[in-house]
Amino acid sequence: MAQSMTDGDMNSGLVAVFLENRPSLLRFLHARGAGDAAEDLLQDIWIKVSAGISGPVAEPIPYLYRIASNLVLDRNRAERRRQRRQRDWGRPDGGSPVISAPTCGERTVLAREELDLINARLLELGERTYRIFCRFRIDGSPQSDIAAEFGISLSAVEKHLQKAYRALLDLRRRLNAE
Amino acid sequence: MTDRNDKRADAAIAWLLRLRNGSSEAWVEFTAWLEADPRHRIAYEEVEQMDLVLDKLTMPKPQATQRDYEVWSANGLTRRALVGWGTAAAIAASVAAVATWPRQRLYEVQTAAGERRTVKLADGSRIELNGATRLLLDRRTARLAMIAEGEAYFRIARDAAHPFTLDAGNAQVRVLGTAFNLIRSGGEVDVAVSEGAISLDLPGRSTTLKTGMSARSADGVVTVSKTSIEEIGSWRERRLVYSSASYTRIAADLSRNSGVKLRAAGDVADRRFSGVIMVPRDSRELVQRVPPLLGVEARRSGEEWVLTSSRAPL
Image 1 (cartoon, rainbow over the protein chains, first blue to last red):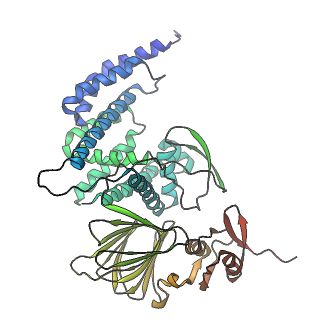
Image 2: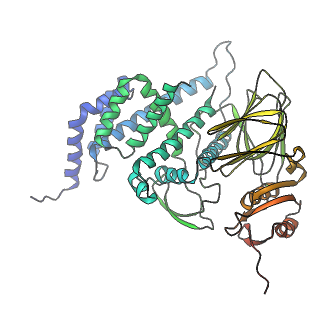
Image 3: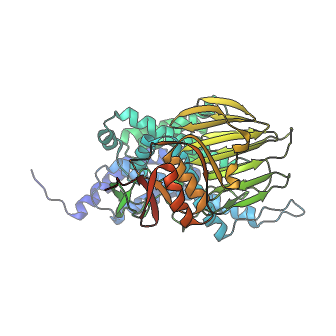
């Protein structure tokens, strides 16, 4: 029986999926460390979903999990910023001097420097790894497309990406080493 | 760093990759993995933070090239960018971006092509930067540096208790008190020791280089050889000394030393040259005098000079 779907139908479909998966999403939020904020974040997802902002969603469940994951990420970032502000500007009585935060100009320079370091590091991994990384992370190509394009297996693509990400993680650790 | 810590990091990366276009099963399994051990969550958060910075990567502005590349920037807008793999700086920075990797201790020293600069560190060490070079130094210690790109000659003060570490990506250098030259460019690293000894860590190979020895890491291959000490860091006297060096490399060196953008065209890139090239101070002289030494011609192409086979006489 053919049915044509209106925007309202699609929206209510997503809402239905959300309600069905509410317990799993809550469990996921807790697993991501949302703690007491988990219920609030779940509410935020509900608001986004019922507002019907998104168009048709091919994979509703992964879509909802992705929203949940991003909400936790945003919350953690805000929390870290708050802590950093306290550390940068708070002066403990008679305590040791705080290293001054970089200025806007310095941070721009640091940002450019950082991206140069990332670029240099990726280049060292070899042309194929570099290109596969760019296809995946910058172009947003799915791994299956990349495998087809390069004529290699999916697991070979995974290995290249794993290698690239690992190299960048190590770079980040070296930059942040205390 | 323990092995288990490494395994968790690798697992976290695998999850990040898998979840990018993940199925509902993937997310459910991911939840179970997070629940299995609190350290899994911490490992994942670290990887996620690292990944955030990568959002700022975009493809560069169009340049004269070889390949057509359709590109989606981080904002999802299509841009037709023309990119050649041979050009080293293929990922450009968005200048308005702000670093999310907190690094308040590090500061940058950099030179434009053709420029030189000497940095003196608190412990008496001296670093001479060649052109087109970027170095990161640490406010809190003179015993740590990172070279992102370019060439520098290091004269490191002796301190047996505190080795000096130079991070050059693939290559990690550790010295007690030594003089050496290092180039990091286009995924390749060249190190040569003129005084003392260095410990050099490269993927798959750790080696000690003593006075008069050099190592080159290119395309996953490491070659160690003897070098004449007078030749090490000779760029400081505007002398480039080569033993079977590729023209691609020589073009990069000449660009760095002069501020003239030079590139070796496909037909000459793999030729080899042995000998000494004096780098003239005057860029016109450079473009006139050096190509004939290499048996090539320099032809202007936009902002670059391209080294290519000499035209056959009519």
